[in-house]
Length: 84
Length: 135
Image (cartoon, rainbow over all chains, first blue to last red; front, side, top):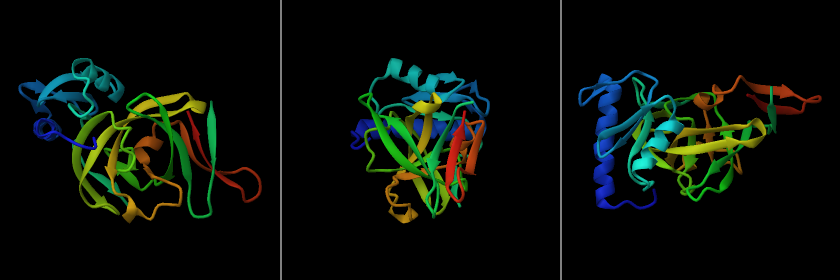
């Protein structure tokens, strides 16, 4: 993730927008999601929903081997971290 | 149940674990334990560790000792003595503002600790504290 091509940044923004929408509305492009499932995205579209992050990463890398592309996350109602 | 122990320092606890690099090698890192760190991410990692992020994760707000929207990535963590291996979400950032213990490269938080059956501090000999993880 040291350097990004413009196309990678645009792809990241598509995925970021999708991830935020999924966590906020538990829905994206007609597909429903539950809190706790793990999702992989590519070009703003869902590649897979899995039981854990390992499976979501494997599913993503099966279709896109470039480590700078795609996105993996667990669905939560809030994307915040707190460091007290 | 397998347990690993990490010698405590006077001013905090440290975990030693391995992160799998993009090339598949194991990179050992030392992270400071902070059970007050919780949320989506398991780790805060120095952005100088730039060869362990296997996929982007959603950027998001961080509150407290770190602030603002932070970059996140997916990393693969393993602790061989516990047979533990799993993908984790990490905040990837400049850690200079965190007052980390010398020799550490980031934080490990509550989301990571709660993947184990037990974790905490224990005396192994008078006044000799260790942090432990039990899987």
